[in-house]
Amino acid sequence: MEPRLCVIPGDGIGQEVVPVAVQVLRTVLPEVRYERAEAGWECFRSRGVAVPPETLDAVRRCGAALFGATASPGRVVPGYRSAILTLRQQLGLYANIRPAASTAGFSPRTGVDLVVVRENTEDLYVGRETRSGDVAVAERVISATASRRIARVALRIADTRGAKKLTIVHKANVLPVTDGLFRDSVREVVAGWDGPSAGIEVEETYVDVAALRMVGAPESFDVVVTTNLFGDILSDAAAHWSGGLGVAPSLNLGDGVAIAEPVHGSAPDIAGTGAANPAAAILSVAMLLEHVWERPDLARRVTHAVGSALAGGVHPPVLSSVRDTVLHLLESSDGGTS
Image (spheres, one colour):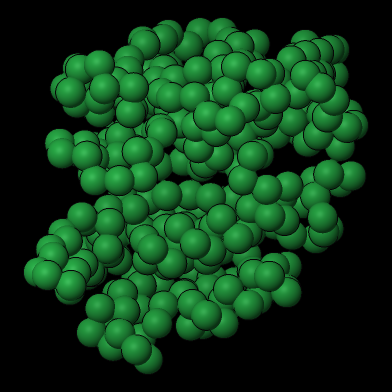
């Protein structure tokens, strides 16, 4: 079957970086067929819903999507819920995959090559909050089913990476019921794993210690598996070592459906100026190539081209500078791999 992609530019600079990523994808995989859909804050303002039903249908139909960015009102707005959270939960995108690797000449540190695998549907992100007077309560949900599921994703990634170590991050000393369940469920899956990563070194670390290591010794990590909130924070910290959130890709993965998403946000302060860096969106497409369409060869070409473009120096206007360099490398005779 020919690959299909649902294109959802979203808000702010999503409208600018997504077309660049699609242009790159057309270059390396011209047989992809596209559908366009809408979601985000502006969609909510115009239609009263952040993710219309037809957008969910389009993503399910295509099996893969590229989502640009969503703005946030920063306040309670009746009827509004984050578009990306809605997409994750409605489509069962239970795994969030966030790689971070050093790029020569661009990253602040060499030797970093890790991936954070984050449970993507539970924890505090279930959105169950109540308030009574001066007291507000948020409900945290952790299940054995979701914890085992994310453990299997982490181990499959460890298999393909040839990983040497799996780090389970939790806070079971303070949250022994919820985080204890998460830890035990992950260890259960590891104990029964029969893939190439069987027998992998497994370590546990509390999330505060993991944060310290992510700042001081990021090269000590290989594959990290953790809960939703902890993974959200740690993956953003890890992004520093690959050049910052502006160039950080991600993939939201479920059963038979995936949404690639640059994590930089809508950046309204630079929208329309040409200052947005499309690297994160392009690298997110590379994750679709690797994990969804099973073309790791093309994913490596795209990743290498982006790395070469960033290492060569990014010059204003950033959007067109990175785009033109990446396309030139991919269209050259060596395919951008020399």
